[in-house]
Image (tube, rainbow, N blue to C red):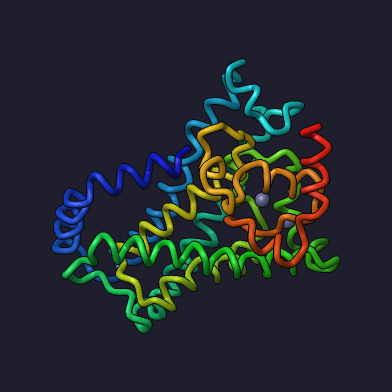
Length: 272
Ligand SMILES: [Zn+2]
Ligand SMILES: [Zn+2]
């Protein structure tokens, strides 16, 4: 839901975004704009993406109940505040320093902020490629995190919520946040994307993580139109049973490597 709205907003406001970019470019240093921009994209993408789902979780309208994948549990104020505190630590204590220390790498590989700004079609191509790179890297790292030692010491943190909700999308052990950050930044680094493209990618990736953890499978969700897009139920199943469906975005890795067999069986049983 959020993902579609954002893509439409970016497409219709492209020239306004370019004007805003030039204004910020003239008033900031390279470090401020790169580090501040990347952090702002992560925070904005995350919390703006959460707002509609948080409202649904708190108000619990009967019209949205049919779309809730696991209907037996909604996050209460205690769960939300615990998760929020954890996120505060992760965003300011882990992600911000990580971005600041990675700044020389971004410069070195050619992630630049200078005009000319990329054309819209180049941005779209880079962002789509980033989705593919992220999905593949995330699949293998996530699957590796499910080996016994790594699960017990690192990945258990993300699985403390077996009924996912939007705010819990990035709630994970600091080492997991760093590990899964690698496929996220791999795309812009490999493609030497413009900083503007990188910010758009980061925001969309955050929105995508929120979408699949939202707990709501609406009929207008992206996977209703794109059968190779995982979506909420796909990842919800992973939290429910702690295994299978390791991919973050698409379904093809789980299909090719056979890690969705139990999920497919369960769906068949449910549809009967
Ligand atoms: Zn997992
Ligand atoms: Zn998850």
